[in-house]
Amino acid sequence: VRPLAFIIIKIGALERSTAISIVIITLILRFALFPMTRKTLLQSENMKKAQPELTRIEKKYEGKTDQESMTKKSTEMMAVYKKYEIKPLSGCLFAFIQLPILLAFWKAINRVPAIFEEKFLGINMGTTPLSAMSSGDWYYIIICVILIAVTYFSYKLNPSMAVNDQMAKQQKMMTTVMTIFIGFMSFTLPTAIAFYWITSSLFTIFQNFALTRRNKHE
Image (tube, rainbow, N blue to C red; front, side):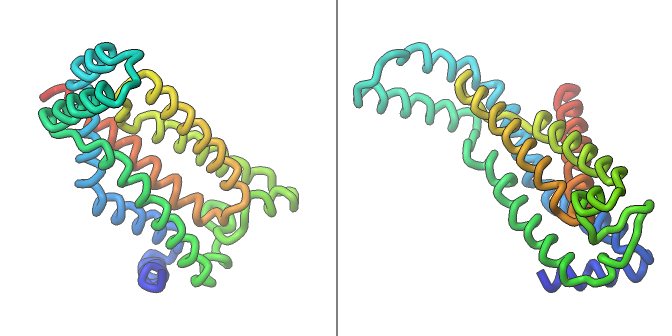
């Protein structure tokens, strides 16, 4: 948290804006994590190639709940994973990393008084949309609307690691729940945090779009 706060202050002093500093740091972090997110997308592409074989295995053992059948099913599915170099848990790694980064930004922003004194595009970086709207500044809702929209599309464009229809439905439900949760949170977090999340989500959207398009042409 302390190094992050220090960097926000230094870049903010150079750019004369802590808001721009947050955007720059977010982009640096996302570029640093790019190899991991690229690997996740490649895993998704491999999963699509393996899907027909996984579906056949699912149908083969459909309705069989005895231990021997379940063991054989698991062994055959692991063989397919190995064949296509799929590591199911690796797809969750980036999602887990996002939370500590978000918390670090939150704590770091609270250590930088300049953020709470700064206005960027007419928006106070230290206030929350809820407190601003309670004071009559309803235009702060635009921040929440943008945040919810980019969050939804970033989750929607994220690579799927679902093995079957049931997992796909569960993933879709989780996407909806997380979007709603983050939407509610956006009203109570400082707008500086919203700038971080919007920048990060936009990066995810453009990154996944570019990588998916590139893979289709290869």
